[in-house]
Image (cartoon, rainbow, N blue to C red; front, side, top):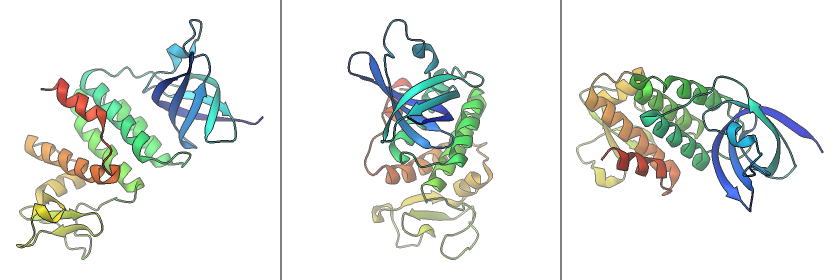
Length: 238
């Protein structure tokens, strides 16, 4: 039986039968991958200490179907022990990828961005900006990458003092006098769009609006699926 080797991160673990587990991975060469880990919950299993989120691991697996069998896993880099807001941000990233990325669809660009984001979020002042960067990269992978400095249809430059509307079919459009939020698009100011383009969120209100704008686009991609990590985050910060 052939074995494959790769680098990856644990995205999600759920118990399977008595002592085993189903583990969702995000791997460098295969993208999202699901494996069964036999005996994970036995008392003498070393995997309980190794299969931790946000740590880069070297893994191997066997199997030809969609569900693989993990045959080996070991640490392959510095361990990242996220806490507080960084932990919530990391769980949010993991849940996004589980719900939005196809299985066994390689996306190296997203993998490298994920590694950078986990590293950067260890510094509290970088959490929000690094999350926004990752969201933009993920949207690009999903086919909704936007140029935040120009109108999608015409290429006209974004003006800070004007408002715009995101339409899933047409992209960024100028907000006309007859447009409204009831038309189904997400309204955003030109100032926020330019901040997203420059990755500059010095003003707290710009930071807040940029977050909700990108999450509105991601909500469209999720097609009604809810993110439990956001719900938990809101409860913690009440």
